[in-house]
Image (cartoon, rainbow, N blue to C red; front, side, top):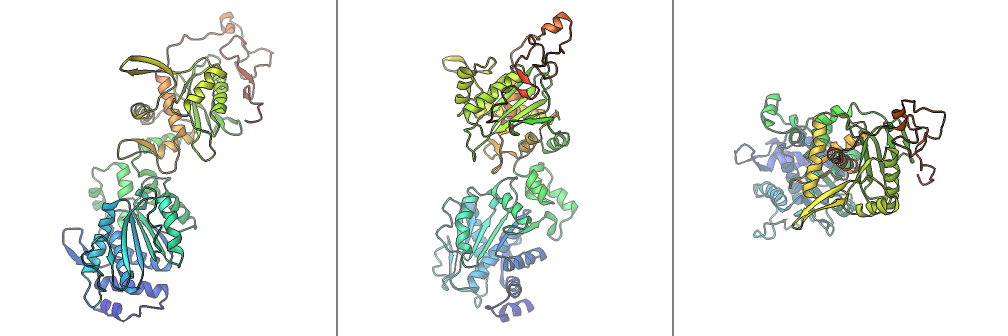
Length: 521
């Protein structure tokens, strides 16, 4: 009765944000109903403390971002806020953007329950009861649910913009960029709420900005914020869940939510173990693009996997990973925005430095340009060739083809190295692997705006290592004669490389690959 009295008697205009929050909370508690989540049917909406706290944030801040666990009643809360605004403020537009039409309809159904069960003396009539796709009132206020599309929200001047499950939306960055100026134009409200969906997507980046004091006001709602949830409840609720499902649906911390959610393709616990053992390179070259963890040994055998890109500054990176053939340890990584021709030159030099390493280059565009330069300009002597099969028979072609079938083979083999806790030296490889996800259709890729160039180069390298043709062990002239390869001749400054008849006559000096006097690198 007291809540109803406060909802009725508190003035509706010229309130401070705190006063408006008090009135909104009292109004929802007094009048709104929702569909119970335990099969009770329609029940009175009695706000939990964390829901009341969010309502206060809604009125105190123009923009709010909420990272949440599931089943906390937050969609019902924003639906009740939307109805409150539509009833209280004439000519307000509340836009609710959802990941698809079904999700948009579900949010509207929660708005309709909150509206339909209002007392008649509180309710503002709808313009046309037969229209169920929106909620349009005679005071010219309206609640409009929409699925996301690149143009969603662009044509509306919304007083409240709600982005429901933003981390799971397609085009969330485009939608937010298009819709937010209209919502901000009159000092209006934006709410982005979502469970996590991996790191690196637009929602995750907005969260990072928020917790660093930029952009929206952040609120994190863990699984245990709802009264009645204890450890026994958590263990029962998560029984049978994989680690990524637990992190996405019922996170304990924001870090857990973003790092582990989003259907990671690789074993995160294994990656964390490997990451802890990664080391700094012993040196870098080519303006930092090339990192070296181990120099080539005289009789060493090496493999390179290369993932190609077009060389655009804002596009994907080109990447190459060098492995020791025998141990599978990564010994060097090249990562940059080189053009295909530049990348071919770098690969040829890097391959020569590592004893004419067996070089596997991704064949997909722009891979053919890199392969052509390696063959016709660089005359590289040790290129990987893949056997292609079709109705006419088998054909051997240079380069590794990346398609839905071969990519799955690549990623499976790379994942096996992580599961077996094989050491990796480069932290960047493991960090990319931690944000590499499996999509609902079974395809795999980097999550959000993250990159997977080093991961793909490592996967190609591992595949080439597994299927490299047998090679006779190389024996240098010095070994055959039983003399030391360490002579006073300092032309070949890399330790063990100064026998001109050894396995690597290409090292120019102690600085590494001999072409590094080229000012471009």
